[in-house]
Amino acid sequence: MSRIVVMGGGVSGHTAATFAKKWLGDSHEVVVVTPNSQWNWIPSNIWVGVGQMSKKEVVFPLAPIYKKVGIDYRQALARAIHPEGDAKNEKPYITIEYTDETRKGETEMLSYDYLINATGPKLNFDATDGLGNGTGELGEHTVSVCTADHAVHANEKLMETFEKAKQGERQKILVGTGHGMCTCQGAAFEYIFNIEHEAKKAGVRDMLDIKWISNESFLGDFGMGGLHMKVGGYAVSSKLFAESLYAERNVDWIIGAHTSKIEEGKIEYELLDGTKHEEAFDFAMLIPPFSGVGFKAYDKEGADITKLLFAPNGFMKVDAKYDAGAYENWKASDWPSTYQNPSYDNIFACGIAFAPPHLISKPMSSPNGTPINPTPPRTGMPAGIIGKAVAHSVCDLIKQGKDATLHKASMAEMGAACVASAGKGLLTGTAAAMTVYPVVPDYDKYPGTGRDTDYTFGEIGLAGHWIKHILHHMFIYKAKLKPGWTLIPE
Image 1 (cartoon, rainbow, N blue to C red):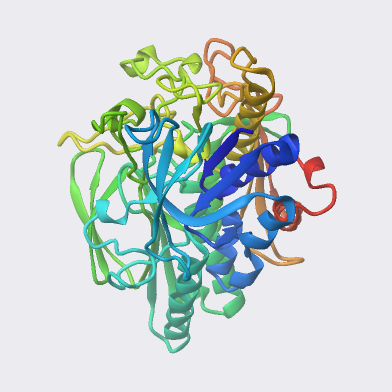
Image 2 (cartoon, rainbow, N blue to C red):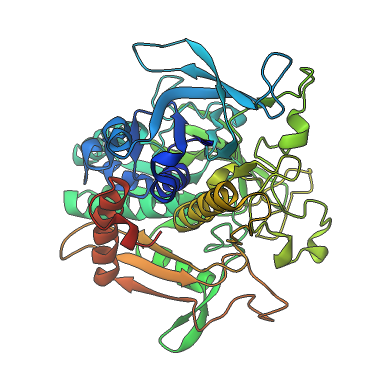
């Protein structure tokens, strides 16, 4: 009997664990280690953050789901990886620290035959002075929608802001990225337009100055270097698409910005031209940068081999080309396809946990040497697809042996769909529904745009909102492993 240990229970880890268990049955063990007791459909957190959904609508407890299908669930933090075992343990193992109330603080060595790292990111609030931690515990300067609890807190603060506006106090709202190396511009994009939509419904839009701040060098970059999509038979740049939406909703913007410091009601930021500025706010939601969760790794003798398994940003090394060098040398083929660690063939990484070979957007920095560019998105649909492919590879290795062919899911050969909400409402909601193929542009195969414009298109309207609302319910249904869940695509 083989044991698969999956570190992380988010979109990618949950997908990997549940498919692995379905394909292997009771003949082999699947263990999930995650500090979270609940699964969170993160794309709907933006609706929690404006009071249009409750926390209980975007989360559910993991324990009953895993018990139902025979997955061994450990509510714990994975702390270190010992891929060669040690003097006392021949099998590789990870050390874990329990976070549930009954065993809190207790540690354990958990052996594995195959390890899947799907931990997602550490929300690196500390990277920006004064950013806080999204809940107000480290200061009330800004809020976040990265977790369901963050989103609940964000809505509380937003409603206070609306109330002040109703009392005749003009309010400045600032939404975007809280550092020059952030990703997840899409979540902030959705949030700012949902705020704008709710402000109209509340009758306070004329009392709000709403502004966007981002590390993107142009609106619509989204960490993917932008895209050209087919709209009404024409190839339109995401820059034009985004600028039109911001202008239509009267939302001003600051781009190419690195937020360097946050104080009460004020941020300091640096632009790509090297100039430094300040911006006042009454309410701010700024996405933090991501990093790896901070694992350590040790060889059989106890020597630290963390740098062997992980890139400097803390994400796990996989089958990518990490020595591509200058931007001019980058190719789509640099991106990983199997997500197998090059040093240990029984370790894989998926979702945000894998280290990308380089940016997708063009690297930029100010004359002061400050990097200001979005880092690559690896969430949502790609995370699920990669998680499923990794699970398939591990199951085949168990069933067929070391010579099994690994399954591939390169983001440079993968299409993705995104539905970005611009306001919730049965008859008044809008959303931008977009597809992109491939996620990582391939300029050799698709000269000029890097993508196939026959499969890269976008529309905005009420229908897009309905699609996003349907997807919310569909993916929670799938994650709860209800009848027919495998028929719903990632």
